[in-house]
Length: 543
Image (cartoon, rainbow, N blue to C red):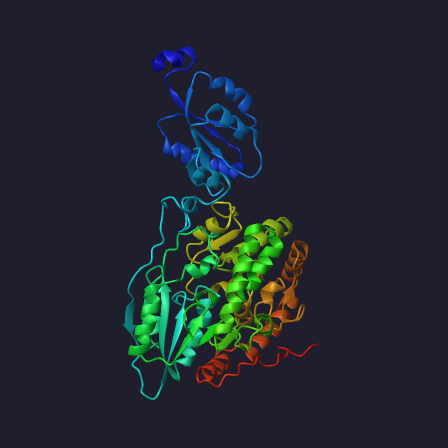
C-alpha cells in the first residue's frame, strides 16, 4: 500500500537527506559534515539559497527521510521551505551545533528560542509535571592531613568555591599566595569544592588540613529562583556538615569565606573578589534585556543582605569599598615578585591575552577584541599574532556563554587551555591585552604583566582599582578604534612600550607585593583589622 501511494505521488523507494544551509556558511559546513557521519548510507543533498531552485526539481523523485536545518535569529527562505517540505522530519541545529528533533512540544519551543540543549528539559522544583532532570547533591567529604599543627599557632579556616591549584586564573593565584603567606603564623584548614580530580600536594606543604567536598550539580532553570543560580550551585549539606564537624575536631577560631556566592555559609570574614552586583549591573546596562535585569536585581538583593551579615568584609580596591556601602578592609590583589621577574623583550609583534573562559567577562573581552578590534589591525600588521590563555575546558564554557560551537579559527590566533606556567608566554610577548568590556574587582593578570615589565593596553574596567595612569604606566582605550590605535602605536614604538612597562613595574613593586598584602591579612585574622577602609592614596606621584 505504501509503495502504491508513493508511486501515485511520483516518489521512488529511495529515502534522501536534505540539509538546509540556512545560516552562516562556516557553521553550515560543519553541520553538513556531521549529518554525513550520522547517515552515511543515505543520499545527501545540500540546499543553499543559490542551489535551491534547481534542487527542488531534482528532489521530486525522492522521499525525504531527514531534513536538518540551522536555526538562527535571522529569517531564512530555506528554513521556511524545509518546514513546508518535511514538517515532521526536521532535525534542528542551533548555532552551537546542538541538534534536536522538532516536535509540537515545550522542549522544541525552548530549543527554537535559543535555550541550550542541556537546559531545555529542566523544570523548577514547583513545576506540576514530572521533571526530566534533578539536581545532584553529593554527600560526604574527604579530609587530607598536611603540615603538622603547632600548639603556639592560632587555627583559622578558609572556604573556597574551587581548589586553588593549579594557578590557572586570578582567584586561584590570590587564594594560593595568601594561604602560603599567612601559614607562617597560623595553622590553616582549607575547605574547597571540587568538580574534577585535584593534586593536593602543593597545598599540603603549608596547610594543616584540606577538606574536599564534591560540588553539587545544579539542574534548575536559571530564571526560576529568587536567589542567583550561582548561589544554588554551591548549596551543599555536605559542606555545612564538614564545617560543623571540623570546627569541633580542628578547632578553628575564624572562618574566612571566599567569594559572594558562598556567603550563605556562616563565616566571620567575607572576601569580595569582585562586587558581583556591580558586574551584573554593567551587563544589564549593556544588554538591556529582561534576563540581564533579573540577574542584576537578584544579585543586588542577595549581596547587600549578605554583606550586612558578616562582621568583616574584604574588598580589592577603594572603589569597591565605596560600592559595598558597609565598613570594609581593602586587601588588594598582588603578584609574586620573586616568581615574575623581568626579562628582556624580544623583537616582534606578539600580543598576549590571559583570561579563563570559565569567567564569562573574559569571553566577552575576547569577542570584543576579535570581532571589533582585530579586523582593524589584521591587514595593517601582517606579522601581528595573538596568544590567548583560555583556561580548562574552554570550549565548554564558550558554548555555554555564546551562540557558537567554538571561536572562529584564525591562523594568527593561538588558543591555549591550561598553562601550568604563564611566565614563558609573558617573556615571548611584546604587548599584553586586557580588552574587558565588563569587569569588577581587580585583575591579577595586569599585575603579572607589570611585574614581568611588559606594557599593557587595557580598557578602563580592565585596570580599574590599580592606580595606573594612562600614557604613563598603562594605555587605556575603550572603543574598538582607540584600542586598535593603541596597539598600533605601541607595537611600532618599542621605546614608548619600554617606558610604560618600566613605570608599571615600579608600581607593582611599591604596592602589590604579596608579603605586604599578607601582613594586612594576618592582622585581620588576628582580630585587629580595622573595619573602616583606609584612605585611598595614589599608587604613584601624578605628573
